[in-house]
Length: 458
Image (tube, rainbow, N blue to C red; front, side, top):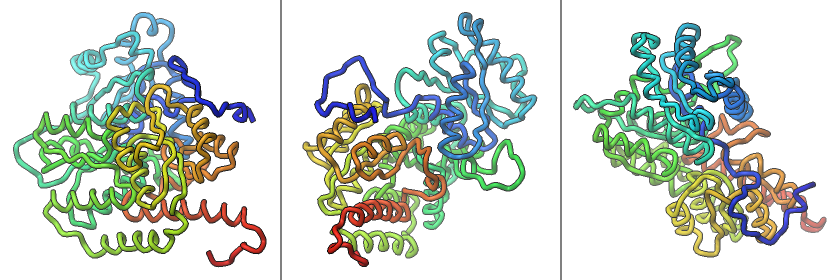
């Protein structure tokens, strides 16, 4: 109801964000850490921060998220959290016995200036890290960046701490999948396996945050990339970095540290981006694309062609994470849809805007980073009145207020299930997206059709 007071006219606001179109860095860092097998994420800050990070992921995945905290109180908040982290490391290995602890900072520990590398070295020197166990860390101040940069920072730290080059190549291809769903990571692995390509996919949350109910509690689910594979990533033939914001920093570091050449690609969402991913896998591994993959591609083209009249010149407004948005904009424009506005709270920089405009032209409103909030997005929806909205659960309020169908995509999605189990990447993912878009458009057409135009076959 309050949203109806949102003014249609934009007002310049340089020092104010209203309902940000992002979450904070530690959420992304915690999600990335869950993609290591037998890893316990650790939040170096107050209990409240850790509770928020865990609840954000738990509500999205409908699964309990295991993580620990340094539990800052007044003393640690003033004098620093070294003693808390030292005791935490000892307790975690003694009680929960993970293979690895992945520590991320919070606003509080960043402002205090805790040197986590020094603390971890001190813990190792004092024997608080058992033989064969590891502790890694990344800096994730919540007052800048977003959950996407937090994911990128933790993935980069995996390379920094773990990956090594022995000089003997394994012949495998590294794939850094970006901040995508576990179902998407599973689909990326399936496509590579179908093509006969041996890969190291990291981080990999499939089998961790979408694990089956077995009637038995598992502190560490079966999924996740084993530490040995991340170490051996330094001996791989090449790295495919899917998404410029979430994956490229780790791939660049792997190239610098271990001389593993990188190939930056868009997230394989839609036909064109999936073609590029499959083709790069083919060229890098020296394999052929099997008939089974070609059949999947042909099915996407068939549906796209059969139903093109429903997509043609429909308009859409998008809000979400930059790597998702770039690929999604590409797919929607390939469907002959028009993009009215694209907004992300993650700082995407000029390259993000350039990538979007390369598909849409100059008529589309594009904004990222500071000031790119849900309030601005709502104003743009009021002004341009698109046929569809693409965004996460928070966009449902705008969709209801403006009576426009919402396609839920991105993070977080609190009010629906399926994103954990059904991919949107690859050709199968493209089919799912086509089905979601068509269902929304045809449901709206049915709802608004006069009696004489209400058709059984559409």
